[in-house]
Image (cartoon, rainbow, N blue to C red):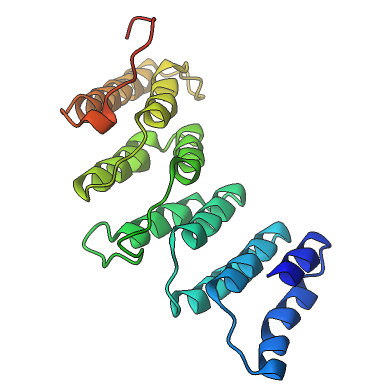
Length: 205
């Protein structure tokens, strides 16, 4: 893993792959999950997203844990592969009638989910993708940090709508959609699950 990291940081991705594949053959051992995770991280660092996906497919044969999925999802977010990141969250937790890939003892932390939710928000996908994702996580019994959810979605509702288009009917349509999204988020946040309630603060909610 150390050599793979070193070559990845030096932008020598082919050498990183050589270490991960040639050395095990030479010394007759099988790379573990840590080596594959380091190799996947090196791929993202060198802007080789497709190779990272290929490495992850190999890693899944050994069983990918929360750390491996975290590197994968974080790399997707940084590379702008937001839809792919969402799909991997769904795969990890077995959302939407899929089989859970994460071990029962492993989870994705807020440091993985928060950048994804913020990216969805910044791309105007909070209502279309973000809220359904959060709802699916909740139904699966996943505890999601309330602070990051409030930050990710309430910033969306407070940001002025600056999309182009002078047509007033179009503006009213967007406003109705925004109001609907805010109601959906408020319903989700106040549904009675303590993990989704806003933290106490001095300001008025």
